[in-house]
Length: 138
Figure 1 (cartoon, helix red, strand yellow):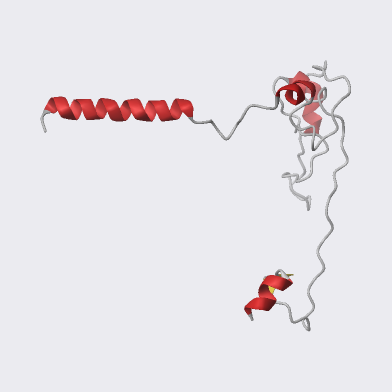
Figure 2 (cartoon, one colour):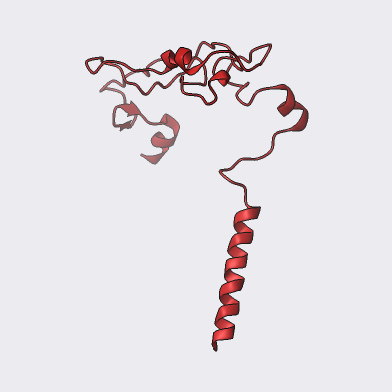
């Protein structure tokens, strides 16, 4: 194999890699369904959409209060799991924080029941596993 063949194989390999990178979808994004994607916001399934979506007049000095910061002695965490709005007070540009979605009450699931020691179900750490799957395995 001479230098010309090696150079040709390298160029072909680079061409294929570049082609695959350009053709494949980035980050799993795909285009929306045409009429629906023009009329509704991206997270309209999870959050109430503002009936009049717009860029609001709030600036960074007003929306920063939506970013959760708790004191060090607080028993909670700054990592909120259920947001009332999909923004966290740091959206860019700042006018997009309050104009697209309304405050949406979140459906927070309750704590699961603790398994009793007399229950024949298989315990996985603290919780019971699926009874049908584990009962058949015994």
